Length: 353
Ligand SMILES: Nc1ncnc2c1ncn2[C@@H]1O[C@H](COP(=O)(O)OP(=O)(O)OP(=O)(O)O)[C@@H](O)[C@H]1O
Ligand SMILES: [Mg+2]
Image (cartoon, rainbow, N blue to C red; front, side, top):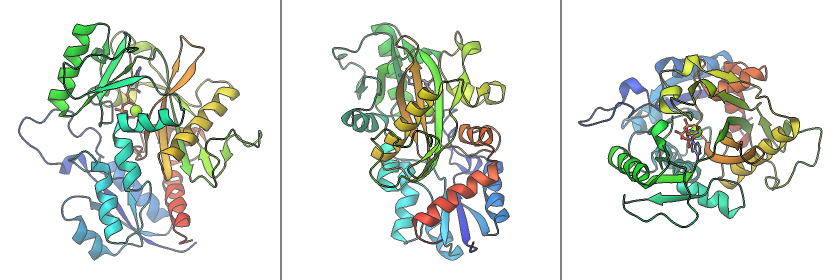
């Protein structure tokens, strides 16, 4: 294996800008220093050179000065509708390779309603929805209570709590108003899926136009068509059903260490196959690269029918609490190995190894 010079690009929570009236959870989806240093050290442990560069306004200069062969990109950026696509756009301008999904895919998947339109077009199961730019837009036919209200372009459960589940017009309007006011963006209203909470990670890239086909080789249901599926993880929300009801911001941050993560999730093999195939299909139709995590809810009122909530093409890589890392561990893959799997996937995609 050749040795490369790798710049780890991220936005640390502690370096994020402060502004007046900013909400407490404003930077909840940014990274901690320990995560970024763990990624850097993982890359070094594989024999490469690696440095962390803060993906701020100086990045054009700092990345040019460092002259990386490739960047390990986990930068979420700070502002704008397509913020996760900003660093990849700069890297493409500078013609520097980088890990993970590209500009169009990152811009698309940050926008949940737009992503859902694409999933729906491909016949993939995602909860019925309507987006609200204004609080008083009439509810469309077929949108029946209970409904679920969330921001269109946030992560880490931001704006998501027990109050997100709404049972009538009054609660609906109150929650839409809250999302528009606090997050300054369209509110996404979906049918509430009462069910189990499952997330599934993948590393690799699809080979050939296989995403919308059921796997041909029944025995190879874990590694197929270029993607390595990690075992699905279920978050046991039972203890929190009356306080949160869903995988809320509070659970993803303050209480993350207390949750019961069941991995592999107690699901039968047919269900795992179905989730793998749906996850691969979402990966394909959103144009994701190298790695991603797809979040599902399994409808307990409809035979555990899986619904796709979203795809995260920049999944968290904290060695302690990130879903993808927990899933990899259940597959016998430790943090450093996971990081290098992602790096090697990108290197081979660029033909560098
Ligand atoms: N339609 C829905 N019905 C029921 N629960 C939902 C629905 N949409 C979202 N949720 C709940 O809210 C949680 C967060 O939703 P979602 O995954 O869309 O947001 P996120 O903040 O982008 O998540 P992440 O932390 O993965 O970035 C889900 O894991 C689920 O518990
Ligand atoms: Mg999610």
